[in-house]
Length: 277
Image (cartoon, rainbow, N blue to C red; front, side, top):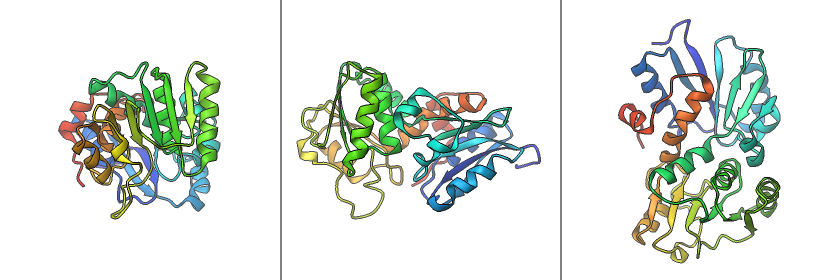
């Protein structure tokens, strides 16, 4: 029940039809008796900056979840950012602080890395390939670096994006070996599709799955469907996989702490979630 005391968390992105977060947060809030709601708000890129300037003047808003295509644009719209968000060059969370200033952070990478670790895969000293250097890909790369990977391959359809991300990573992680310009997955222990490829029927595979070894851990960020063609192909080769929505469940406990709500575990969230595909 939404009342006059309900705390609003905006979910900003476009299109909203693929949003999964409201079906996880809202059942959890209801279960623990917190009067808060995550509300999907569809906003196109051309209108995003103007919306942010006015939205956070509302007196009952705590902050926002930010998703495609606005994660990079949010960089210039907040007053302060975390180190991870600075390296990523993107933000997927905005907190309105008591003085009205906006704090930006990035939890996609944290969620992805927590999921990999929970499945028992070693990250420290491993080699990883991240295909896609946009907001989510940059965040995953930043968190993999923070978790201690030894080698990181970066690829983006816009080579300048991968190169810029590589430079930011190198400035903060001097021992990290960074390679850009290739999406060949051969030889990598962790491989990630951090592009939107797989959201639409008929999309090509984001990389050559035949070059992925059976021992490789394969992750996905697309959440529109649980098993994308990329994940099905990797699983058929014997790879351990991580579906896109796992990243969401793993990062929500960190989000809850960020927004000042009681936190929980991914398993407890899954028990109450009403996610559908």
